Image 1 (spheres, rainbow, N blue to C red):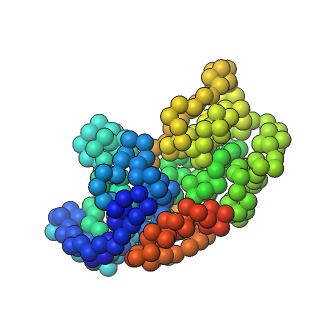
Image 2: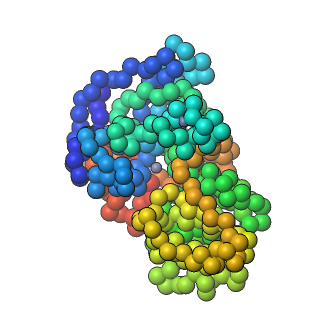
Image 3: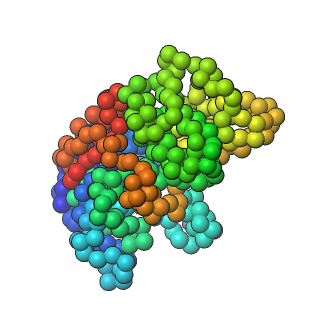
Length: 338
Ligand SMILES: [Zn+2]
Ligand SMILES: [Zn+2]
């Protein structure tokens, strides 16, 4: 099979590899769609994210869907021909985090496209049955791939306990900000305000249900708010944004930090956290939300189709990463179709 391999920084080449043999509890999936994620671009550009360092050639891509073409002897829930979305992080299923349902915190998780684990920019991938989720007929392969980023938004909304009537402020209108927007709306948020500096992405936010968008190049967030919001989500990872988040939340509200930030140490107003009795919550990936995410898309509650703006074939994976990196003013999600 053909595989796109990150050989070194900014160099991806096509390689021939053996098609993997599925274990008894695995399915072999012919990969159909793989979303390009910010983390793929980061590994491509810098060869590392924090303490995760690419030390040998690595296959990127962790937002994947495809068709089951072979099933191991113990596989019961899936059969050849099924269309599936792959949850990319497979935990140990034995540690205290796994056993208490917080398997995203499993120290032994095997996560696609995180060194040294290969990802999905390949024609085939073998994956455990219980982390492959059947797609209904009305959910496409591209949407199936984007169940991965959507899961982040759903999980963040659950952890934040978004309730009907809430007013929510979201920093960042990239793919994660846009799925968080749609998730909080699906969970009943009355008012969702999205903040970014990119007009193309803000217009997408508007299209996807934002009640108000703010471009901080021309407007100040405080000029647009009459009062503090119930929940602030940071989907920007930007240190100057993060240090301001506590200002915009009302007393007793919550600030949710999605994913990893650009720096380890960022100053926040701790007296504001105390005097307003704020809850600060971190979000690392997601757990137990894949099925729900698929149902919300199948039921028309969440639109992933309009997030996909560009397609590339597998042998153009390098171009796909370059394009996604350099064209944030005209693309949201770039998808590779092996
Ligand atoms: Zn991702
Ligand atoms: Zn575990």
